[in-house]
Length: 93
Image (cartoon, rainbow, N blue to C red; front, side, top):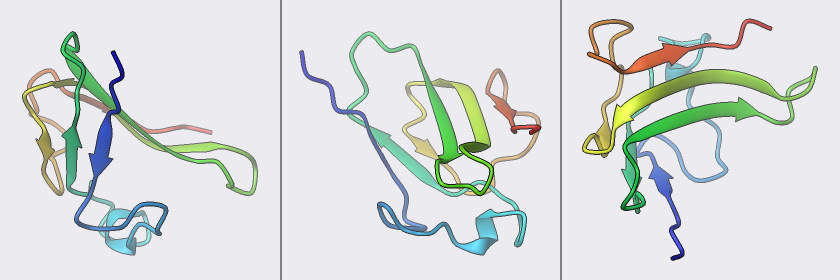
């Protein structure tokens, strides 16, 4: 079975720059994401936002995991707490 997970955003295009609103230079909020083509056996979703060409090597900007597969629309600016079992993290490098 060939599953091609698809993650898109209305805030930026594929291989484009993430607007400053979603960075530490702006409001530092999460962008809206849509997740599609989730495999039939999946129980949760993990999103890793990394920067492979950062000056000191690959840098992880944001992690969010334990997202139930039913949450195919991840809203803009999800709160830092109070998301049930959904967990967030940042790289501390």
